[in-house]
Length: 106
Image 1 (cartoon, one colour):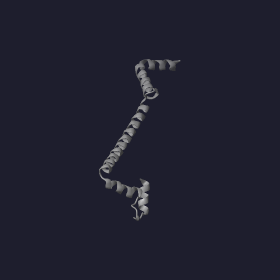
Image 2 (cartoon, one colour):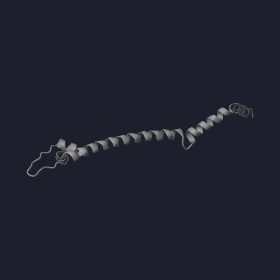
Image 3 (tube, one colour):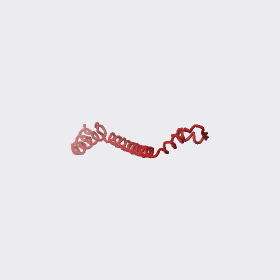
Image 4 (tube, one colour):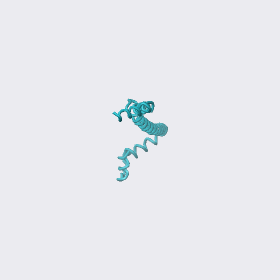
């Protein structure tokens, strides 16, 4: 009984600190919007922003290439020859293994 009384005395002296600690644990780890989830959400947000920037850069590059193709008809022929290995009639083309590997990587 003496230990129980000592524990009660300790808790009654530090009741505000104990209440604050319970509140901190509840909000920090048990609540639906806890700190661990917020850190995960922040990490996901940063990953998605980086992905948006990557897609924006890819979009800008594609738009630039499209504008280049619209202005210069020679560009269409160059891309058809390089990327799709097209040729004119009565023309021979030679394809090297390194070129095929580059085309397949794209």
